[in-house]
Image (cartoon, rainbow, N blue to C red):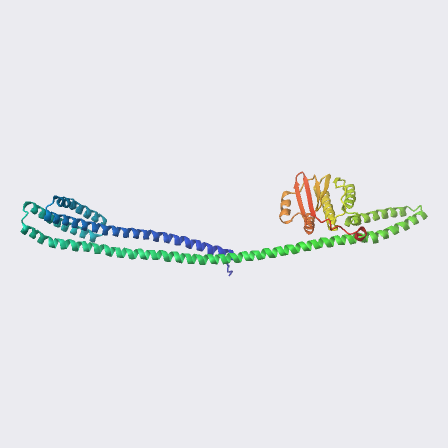
Length: 452
């Protein structure tokens, strides 16, 4: 049975997703808790409103009693008017209190009881005022009214106290509920924050590990690529050295042997002038010597070491035009002088490979070669008017140098080795290869004798 293990990116995504989900659920829970907390706060405010209404009812009754006593003492009509104003205010305050306590059956019962007792108490106040108007000296009647009002006053006081106690009890309960909900909000927010912080720290560690692994992989890839480039550059150098050595061997050994054979055959031919086969052998030997010289020069032209890039390029272009039938238009500065040997060799190999590609693939009947020289760099351009490089292959080469053979890849590696740049532009009307190589004037090649 195959057990699937989660990779670091999957774990990081899972930790991040869990943290986001936890924060979302915590936010939802906190929202509902805060909503309930605000509701509790509203009921707290409601309880305070009831207590204020109770105080207003009590104050209205006390105000009516004070106005009644003032009238009984002084007989001033102003106190009577105050009493008449206080009576409907008591009824209005009781009605308002009943509306505020509509959610509490116990308070509704007490409101009804208080309303009845308050009405009886106000009726006694009115009876006392009427008795003062009709019989001002009837102290016995006033005493009887006061005696009947004592239990009503006590009942009003006890009922009011019961209502206050009920509201205080409700206030305590609602305060406790509000405090619990507030603590719940704090606990939820703290727990959610801690858990989210832990999950985000896990996500950060996993992400950091992934980034570190990626950086290590990229570093290893860069080291491998750099090693490959150095290896490629070294192979190109060895190839050039081998070509130079092989060219000299062809020219110095095999070429000399062939030349000696030709001289002997020439002397033998003059002695045996009528030998037709000998003449054919001499002709074939001439062709062998010419071909050997051509191969030697193509591998590594001696002019490149002896006279520099300009002379070697001119010689090579003349021979290439004769062999391929491609018209070459050359635009070189009049006085190039000698360049550093690696630069001259790089320019010649680029020229050689570019013309080979034109002959093999471009299908162009002419080519244009130009060169620009400045104090610190040289630019060589080779243009043809052929069918061009397919766009897919060109894009592939620009990305990673793949699918275009080793010619362009070799040119690019030579330019990298020399610190230069290779640019390839191609369309249906032709291809332009441009190389730019920096150099220092102080880095001149050795003398001609040392170069040889």
